[in-house]
Length: 140
Image 1 (cartoon, helix red, strand yellow):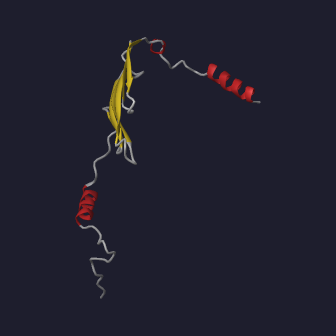
Image 2: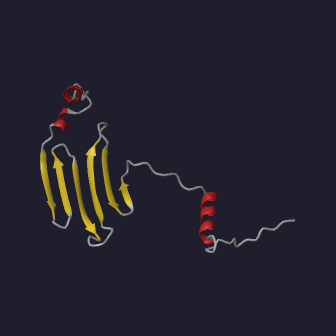
Image 3: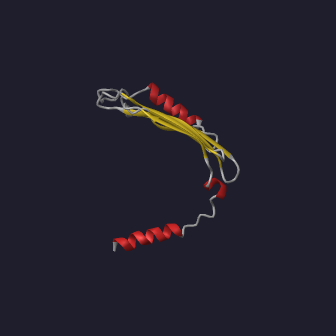
């Protein structure tokens, strides 16, 4: 049964539709490639292909001897989309999450003025620490 499952997956991969791949991109030569890693966990790599795809990244371990070590990675890549549009992206990934920057990424709408005022009011008037309300309700 396992053989049949593996055979079915292999057959599906062989029959996969790859017409959307540009033949030149598929066989692009690697014109530059380097990689380095240190025993401490820091690394850096870069590569470039003959068809203009480029990527580079580097990372380092921060707080290695603490209870909460983190890996900080930064890098960028660029390529040309199938529509002929150049795509470039740079990124940082650290304890604050993944932060990509690129002209092709969607941009959030600006915060409406009423919401911005509400957020400013909330920031200026934090709730009391002891749990008691600073404002006394008035009835009548």
